[in-house]
Image 1 (cartoon, rainbow, N blue to C red):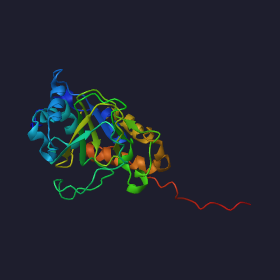
Image 2 (cartoon, rainbow, N blue to C red; image 1 turned 60 degrees about the vertical axis):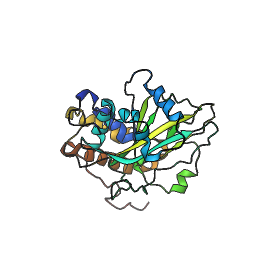
Image 3 (cartoon, rainbow, N blue to C red; image 1 turned 90 degrees about the vertical axis):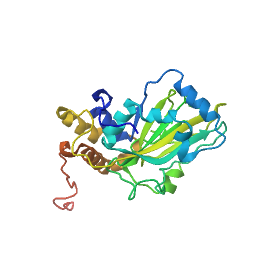
Image 4 (cartoon, rainbow, N blue to C red; image 1 turned 45 degrees about the horizontal axis):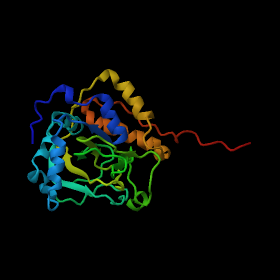
Length: 281
């Protein structure tokens, strides 16, 4: 893996972008490559006689170049710290024409190659899924759908999985070469491929190695008030409106876990405390 010690500041995320990730649970990167790079990856994927699983990068080494691109490294360093690690688990999804939609899901915790103690973390960024699309993905090609903000909440799998479309879902209609970074706990699904083209997606996992003592992105403390206001008021999926207090608390805690000593001041206020209601006279 490319060293993250010499990261150009211009490739690190801004406060605005990190806040977006905290609020919505995803970030999109479009690393720049020669025009034919992604079509060559696609062609090599087409020649595979079987799915190589975790060995996909050994069979097609070009794929590692995507995840070692300075723009991708900058984003991952901003969210996971500069000493982040790449998990051994990788997977290539081949979505044929006629493939049906997946059920909404969070990725499994039962992956032996994940670090010991890996679990659902609703107020931190411990792990991310990073999805690479070597071809343009149109709305009928089985794009990945996700529910913004759903990484902040736990839900019974059979409850979300039983739903179809959500009003505020995001569908990743993206150009070739796009890299989609997702919080590990976000609810997502592959949609139906009703086109006549195969849609490939290659997924890597990255994990935090240590806790942050300071922001590892382009942080401007003068923007703290604006960031706090966004964490309090910006909407993600409207299905979370009944959980606004919990949502805001977890957003702020996540930001503070990422920012270390530069975290925002947050005071919990119990709105239900105080005098008992008086009987009507």
